[in-house]
Length: 232
Image (tube, rainbow, N blue to C red):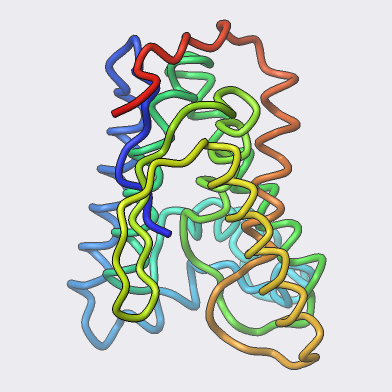
């Protein structure tokens, strides 16, 4: 399922969302420019669970092996589709949550969701030596907050099933619950495999989603805007 747009207007210019998209994009372009040095960069600034939990054993200690990668990894990506997909989801859903929280609180919310997502990923795979990169965990927090704030908003969605292509307008709660259920199913299957594999950090997605819901209840916020556009 690919969201194309939602029906809830934002009452402010989403400068924080635009800024986050710009930062992620610049970091990705920098990664592309590294060429053969990219692998070293990813292992240095990506979040490696085993290195995180044993940070004191490595040169640079906790700062270089835990705190820095915990932050830097959420602005890095592993491919063009990875960064484009993440930034598209952030653009669709981020402006509304920024509108509710305000620009500064939204940035703090985003970072905390990314940290929460990374921590859950580490909890479920603390021995992994593979670097985790991507904004997916933080953006998953935005999705969780959107579910609580605008459950009945409409999301124009592109369904692609083999050769079948359909544009369908569905309630946001249907789209987001289905998205979360897919992460849960895939994450459980991956965890049950009992082996270290690369790919999608599903538990980070779920962690970010849950943290986003929790933080929305804690953060001071504006009331959600009415859904003026009931249909597209």
